Amino acid sequence: MRCPNCAGAENRVLETRAINLGIRRRRQCQCGHRWATVEINADIVRDIWNFWQAALRPAKVKRANKRQAAQAKGLKAMSDL
Ligand SMILES: [Zn+2]
Image 1 (cartoon, rainbow, N blue to C red):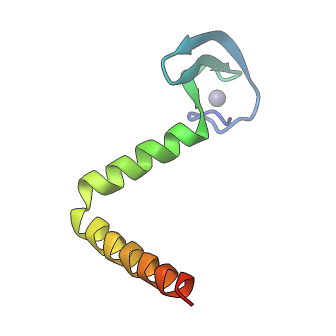
Image 2 (cartoon, protein in one colour; image 1 turned 135 degrees about the vertical axis):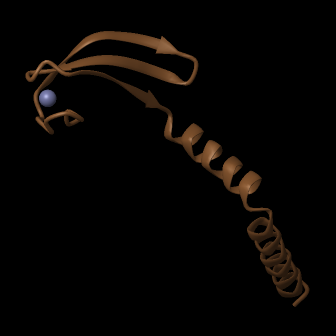
């Protein structure tokens, strides 16, 4: 994790704390800048991303549902062979 202030790669962790979604770390760079990073389970990030995609773009979701329905139809047709 590079420093947001000087982009330096060297920094130390001042504090590590468990939060609801994962782990929060307070960091300090050699330049003196302090900031915090959060470590989150990637599956949760994906779920949150999908949730907001669905919430903010209803038209896109409708298209996706249509496509899924078409795929399901295709699979059904194949299973009937
Ligand atoms: Zn720095």
